[in-house]
Length: 294
Picture 1 (cartoon, rainbow, N blue to C red):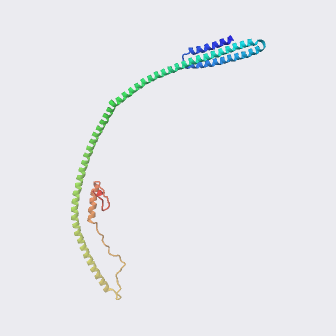
Picture 2: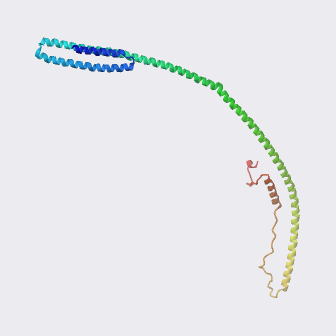
Picture 3: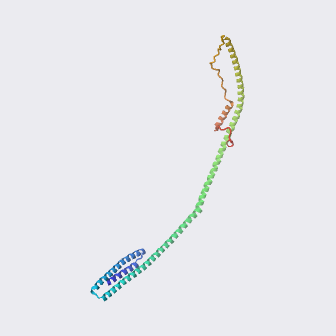
């Protein structure tokens, strides 16, 4: 009986030392759980041994002891068993209370560590916010004005260059327009001169045409008269049968073709003059709308 009580005392003291001696809370909790499991196993083993011993004593009492002695022994054993159970319950309660205290302490330490880490992070966040604010301030006060100045300078330079190019283009266009106007005036003068020459040529051509017509009429009249005389002579010299001697299978006299019209000649010369200046002839409908006419 004393051996069981000594074992129980050793188990309880080991459990208490295990609870008090650890500093790392997670490790403490794990060790306490392991120790409690081992203690429960040992206590259950002790209880089983006590119950076995009670059974053995009951068997022995049936043969060697009186009923009073057996009852006294049974009462003692039951008391010892109750004491063991109470000691076990007290050990469980003490270990559970200490474990709860350790858990609360671990929770509080973890919360304190989290609060401390949160304060550090808040300080870092405040530092980052200050850095971001400084960057925004730099962008608004220094970078944006520099960019705007560069843009304005580039726009001013581009505008100045564009104005110079426009002025040069206007000068070139003015020179080309003057040259074209001079060429056009020269062409108009040549056209006027050619028109006068054309009118004079038309007069000469009309006179020559009239002379040619009169000469053709004279030639035709003379030829007709000569032909009539020849026919008369041939008829007079023909036999009495009166058969004609004229050969109708002979080709006729060729008819002379006409000449080019003076207006066509003048038109082609005008077109040739304007083609030299880069113009071209575009033919279209004889009636146009206002947009294409003007």
